[in-house]
Amino acid sequence: MYKALLNKDKSYEGIFFVGVKTTGIFCRPSCTARKPKPENVDYFSTAKEALLRGYRPCKVCSPLLPKGDFPIWMKTLTDEVNRDPTVRMNDFKIRNLGIDPNRVRRWFKKNHQMTFQAYLRSLRVGQSFGHLTEGGKVIDTAFNHGYDSLSGFNEAFKKLTGANPSQVTNKNIIHVYQILTPIGPMIAASVKEGICLLEFTDRRMMETQLKILQKKFQAPLVTSLNSHIQQLQRQLKEYFDKKRTQFNLPLATPGTEFQNKVWNQLKTISYGQTRSYKEQAIAIGNPKAVRAVAKVNGENRI
Image (cartoon, rainbow, N blue to C red; front, side):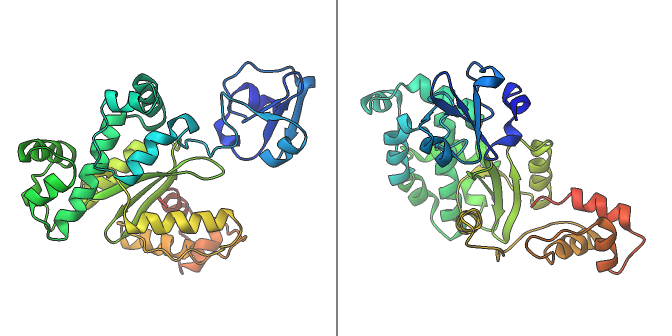
């Protein structure tokens, strides 16, 4: 654990917390603050234990918040956006909320790899895409989603989706949204058929997987929520609260017949149980396909 602390190892998020005896503060293992000597460290499995021992939460890594959550200092801004995602928030309005716009920009670039304004644009386009596919008129959609002109809406829409608003009636869209969990932030992606991706944000090849999905669904990526991702959020929370052991979500898994045979078999593994690749190969009726099953298992996006 001390080695993980020195290396700021994000893979230990949610597994333990560190209390620093000399300062009375407790941190995440990935905290960037100066590291204490090993003899000055206490380890806890939960933040609650650290609090009960009298430690205060670190202001650098905010161990009481889910990793990647909006920080407390940004709450008035996020509340405003949650009330109305179409709201226009320029630097002047952000300052009037008592928040430094530059600080907001830095936080979004670090945690979402985009500026706050790009985040807002993506939310607006995601919502307007859904409105259009349900039969909404382009002009109504533009003005109802915070755009001052039809040309501005058309330009923003095409830049993010690669299509004109009038062309999307029968098109698909890949909704992408970050979900926070006690063991780290995850990226969820969904199309109208169901969830097509759920992975931790630091998973290798994440960008490649998203590009593959774009190609398979012939659809653009847009940061937005849809009903499938909202359902996923609820079920993940119930899982981490120890109130759920099975998921019943619609999934969209484009792949070969063999791939889907392997992926469907994964769903039959009971809660708390494990299987070897050999057992999986036998379960699909192809006991010699151990290596192929292992490969396809690794290609699973959910």
